[in-house]
Each structure stands twice: as structure tokens, then as C-alpha cells.
Image 1 (spheres, rainbow, N blue to C red):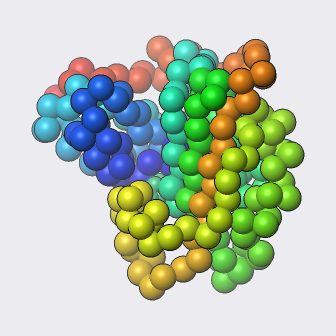
Image 2 (cartoon, protein in one colour):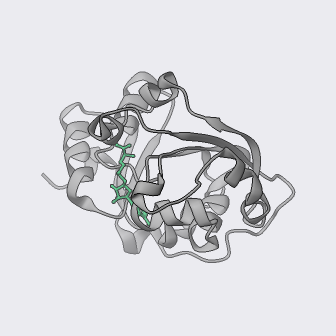
Amino acid sequence: MGAGDGGYVLYRARTESTTFAIALDASPDALSDGAWRAKRARLENAAFLVEGVERLPRELADLADEVTIHFPWGSLLRGVITADPAVLCPIGRLLRPGAELRVLVSATARDGHADFSPDWLSEIAVDYAACGLELKATRQATLSDVAASRSAWAKRLGAPRPVVFARYSRDSSRRGLMSEGTSLARQGIQSTLKRPS
Ligand SMILES: C[S@@+](CC[C@H](N)C(=O)[O-])C[C@H]1O[C@@H](n2cnc3c(N)ncnc32)[C@H](O)[C@@H]1O
């Protein structure tokens, strides 16, 4: 989610032949670079979807074994740090029961986001739980967490900043979370090999 140039998805698709990886971002700007890189590399197990997380297609319900959000900004960042159901519930619906959401967030007072910390995520855990996302762990991220995200944005941020890591599990007792969403066909999701050239 908020995949940017899709670098992480390309990495996962290249190194895990049995994984199908989907990069989703509200903006095509950087994502289209990733899609073309995937096409050039003839990766058949990656797809690129331009859409806001708030409007995830219903065909993706209960599909994901794992969702990652690395260094979000804009409405995705606000959704994560304020536990906005318009952002969190589509993610809850997307995950299979028991599957994981993994988050890396850097939001400082200088960016206008005071006091964002693992303690804050613990405090708002109840709001995540309302979208079927059960907090399993949260802590300050390590340098190796950040390196493993292969985030182009983290590199651009330069000097080390506080980064919070969190891991959630989709509550297996919650059924019927996927009642909303839009049609996948209408949104034109395509495998990278089927993109028009
Ligand atoms: C700072 S970039 C991080 C990109 C990449 N994850 C990385 O770490 O390099 C944040 C991305 O979040 C995307 N974004 C913001 N709000 C979003 C939303 N509501 N739904 C999907 N993507 C969103 C932006 O378009 C942007 O590409």
C-alpha cells in the first residue's frame, strides 16, 4: 500500500517465484516506473494498481497473505496515525484471516505529527481492532527494518529519523468485513505482461 515506485514489490516478486505481489498507490507517477521495470524483467508475478486504499476493489477481499505499508504520506499516513476506518477497514478486508499487516512509519513533530510513537499505536489499538486488525507488536524500527523495506523514500529522507514499526494480524473471528469496495474490472487491474505496450 502506498508502494511509490514499487521497488519492494519488484524485489519480492523477483526473489519469491511463488509469491504474487501487488503494488498499490494512489498516484501513477512513480508506480508506472515500477510497472515498466516489471514488464522489462518479464515478471509474471507482479501487478500494479493505481488506486487509493480507501477504494480497494471488493474482488481483493480475503486475498492477501501480507500487506505492507512503508513510509506513507498524505491520506495513507493520516489514516495510519489517526486509525481512520476509511483507510484501515479496506486493509482489514483485504487480508486473509490470520494474515499480517506490517507498517513502517516516520512522522515527527517537525512534520506536524506530534508524539507519534509505539505507545501511541498501542493507545489506538482498539480502533485498529474495530477494522479486524489486532496489534501484535510495535517498537522503534531498527536500521535493518528500514533497509529491508528497500524504501526509496527512506533513502531520500537522509539523516536517521525515528521510525516506528508495527505488526498486526487480521482477526480470524471477524467475518463479512468486505461489504464495500469497487469493482476490480472497473479499475482495470492488469498483470504486468498484459499491459499495453
Ligand atoms: C513517501 S511515499 C513512499 C513510497 C514507498 N512505500 C517507499 O517507501 O519508497 C508515500 C506514498 O503513499 C502514497 N499514498 C498516499 N496516500 C495514499 C492512499 N490513500 N492510498 C494509496 N496510496 C497513497 C503516495 O502516492 C506515495 O507514493
